Image 1 (cartoon, rainbow, N blue to C red):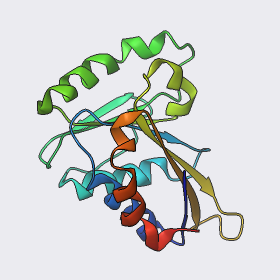
Image 2: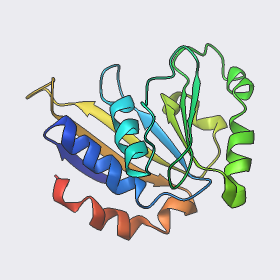
Image 3: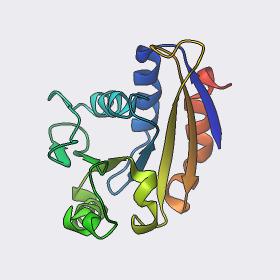
Length: 167
């Protein structure tokens, strides 16, 4: 587990960019945190680092946004409005992950993914974002952990790439 301190939205973007530089086709990133903690903001920095030039917006009402044009496609998913775990199947996440696993696909980032982690499989990177009480408008605390082998193999590189924000 890595614990990071982001003093500003720009720093959160930079942290997301550091993570994105290590991303591979077929990666799953689970984003957790309360409303307004910066999950979409993190995704914007992640996508920009991959070269996505489209405007990244929250998929709360459409549930899935896909962005092309970067080093890897980015599939941005928001499961906040889902009432039942069975509704996750309707999002076709399995298909996105299978497509991504072929090397032709991209990275899937799931906002509120901690709520449905049981059906997402056992290989993902979890990024928890927490509002910092000292400055709730700007500062965030991020806790990152690897679940499964995919990100575990890149763990040491990830730790080094985000070290300037370590707590």
